[in-house]
Length: 185
Length: 100
Image (tube, rainbow over all chains, first blue to last red):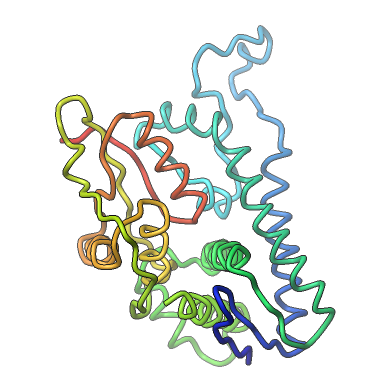
């Protein structure tokens, strides 16, 4: 398993090859989630709006279909119209920022080219903890984790549970994140 | 939130949330508990974004964890929208609302 230690203001992480492969695949998956949403056309549900092109209110802004995206770009207001308006003005930049962090992590991982020790700068450390968090949030949604008891349920799931593999990855991401945060102490 | 908090970098400033709560600044940013984010990550984000001391960030993090939510900043609506956006950029579940 990955070994993490502090190195100046950054960190050094020693990965085994399998971890580099899995992390690369997870980053690809997260990128698809982020890209799919930002490139999705905004569909007007109201045919009159579609016909006339009138959209004087914010409530015709599509709420993301993917629950993982809804978690990454959550409602900022309880009121759905205010939330939709906020989303319309901020979602693209928010997703672009998440892609930038993801790209920084991937660049580091690719520079490693397999198993080995990666030096993460202080700046990239922030990109790493943010991206590992996004990966866990998406995986958490896929695993159906909405409250703390869902984690307990997964902890006690039988060996042959189909979610087992994903949950182990979820746990490993948490371990890596925790270790990296530990270097910031 | 999940797992035990760990120590995080000390911050130099400790601006109190309450300082901004007057009639001209009636909006608050709320962070909500979620089962995925690590407790020490939430503390890290609150220190980084708001410049809170480790003690203050941990106190707010524990309030989120134990009570389900906490007001982490207060001020004008535009500023609170910016705070919510920055918290979302860090994966925290945040909303803004008029202070009750």
